[in-house]
Length: 103
Image 1 (cartoon, helix red, strand yellow):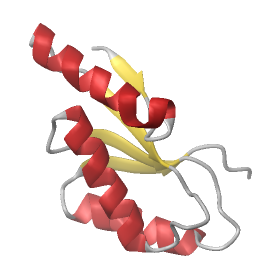
Image 2 (cartoon, one colour):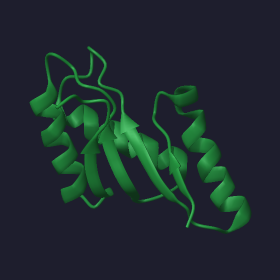
Image 3 (tube, helix red, strand yellow):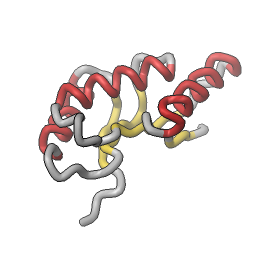
Image 4 (tube, helix red, strand yellow):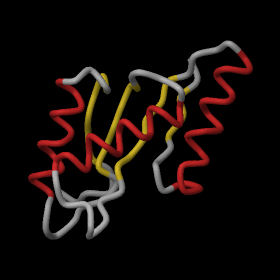
């Protein structure tokens, strides 16, 4: 199975859209991991859910295999983690994680 790692920041969403276009054109389903951009103005758990929903819309899907926080933020990490849990509970994602975090 093909696996694509992308993020809402890659091409400002264009990368996700291209993956969705590929799936529709080829009729093949690929595994996708995308990432939430922990930007300073996005500090609420709801921001994670909204971003995940927007990523899914660009992908043309109802769910994705893995959704991660792209990088830590000094102000809102706990809210982000709660948002990941909300995405999982809503069935938007199959697994959650973090990227570019230290030990």
